[in-house]
Image (tube, rainbow, N blue to C red; front, top):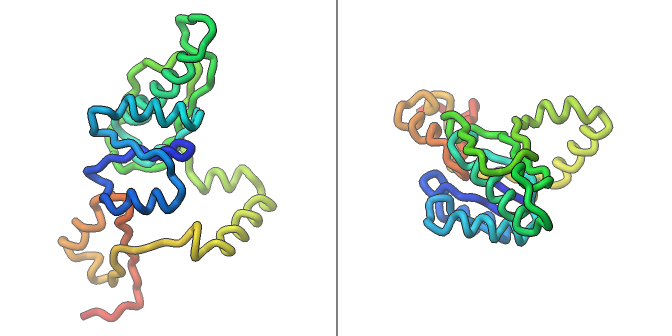
Length: 188
């Protein structure tokens, strides 16, 4: 989950080399969701960035709830008065991935000013209109070897894509583990 320069890692799925990739992208705060210091580290990162909006690639589990609660902790800490409904700061999480296909679990601890929803690029592009889509496409084309570059763990043929060992490898749902299926590869 990337939160305004904050990356919340799930190490079981996130290889250590990705931390350097994140640093190279300019991510200043990387917190580990399985460390005992996670909540404090997350709150410190949210406080440093002022983030109230997050995008969640994980989808299932408690992470979205933990991030919303962290945002509320930061917002409530500077409140001038107490409210039983929490702060008035609107906090949001958009789920755009499904690395965890289980239910998204929300444990209420983030006040009453919050939202959670899904986010898909295709839906966004349909909403913004043709002029914005053209600008975005031009930006992607201009930055295809930098910002929007893709790196693949392995390029496989259509036949390899059916091999059970290869299926197990590309089904792991791990960040930084992309497979490219090239139908033009020769079959061995």
